[in-house]
Amino acid sequence: MGRSPCCCHDAGVKKGPWTEEEDKALVEHIQKRGGNVGSWRGLPKAAGLNRCGKSCRLRWTNYLRPDIKRGNFSDEEERLIITLHAGLGNKWATIATHLKGRTDNEIKNYWNTHIRKKLLRMGVDPVTHQQLPPDQTNHDVNGAAAALLWAAAPRASAAWIPAPSCRRSFCSSCSRPSALTTAPPAS
Image (cartoon, rainbow, N blue to C red; front, top):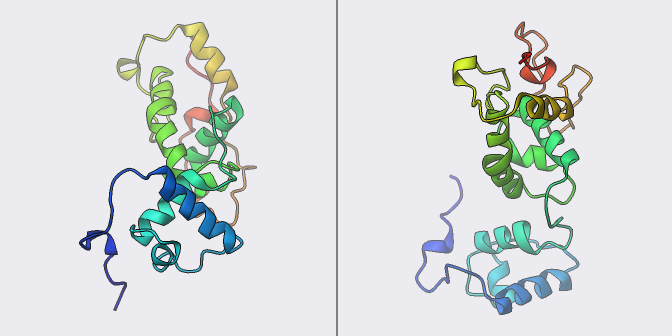
């Protein structure tokens, strides 16, 4: 009949920011088991933590995993995110499988705080990846700068083949060209 509700609402389960001691206990417990967590639901008790399993899973997945890549996104990573988003939409977990060491949450946040705004400044709709009509384009961007950004952007193509985990690929039957496959309007 489905899963029982998360224990996060139980009295006595700690919420809020994690302490260094809690982080250390979680990392040590997972390392002792050779990275094999087993059940996230049973992990907090086994690790001596007063947290719910979901909180432990998210803390490990988004912050404590040793293979998480820290620091700024490279230009190449940004171009890949734009290309994948054009084909997959907001499927952040699927997009993350193509960027080694980056989490879905980190990619989603980077999209919403940086890339989305950059596309709008370039006159590209961040949802459809189509060129915006001139009256909806932010004219703050210098035409030459926009052309340089555009030249660096990837081009969506039929040759792009998603990983087996991808659910959606580019629509070959769509007659409208993507903004990523057409040149910017001459200024």
